Amino acid sequence: VQLQASGGGLVQAGGSLRLTCVASGRTSSNNAMGWFRQAPGKERDFVGSISWRGSTHYADSVKGRFTISRDNAVYLQMNSLKPEDTAVYYCASAYRPYAGWELSDYRYWGQGTQVTVSS
Image (tube, rainbow, N blue to C red; front, side, top):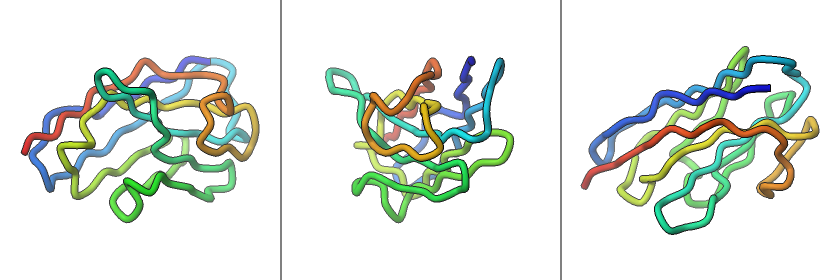
């Protein structure tokens, strides 16, 4: 399974971006998907996840601003962006239909897309 994340870029604070994650290879729509991010010099952090049935969970830092959805791809709609949202964003495919915030819940990872929010 290969995951391709796209949609990153440079945006001003308060702006919006929509990231897309497309899976190829031996994919399964029965697995949960997650988004993580990693800022320079920091650990990779959980952003949110979506189960195979569409239930979502978010990190407290993005609740009310970010929304995950899925159809044939997985999307991360990011609104009201802040400079602290600057990071490389990764999508990941979980081992199971439901997954949480642990990196170990996820089997496959995309290459990441850079999001930069200017103040």
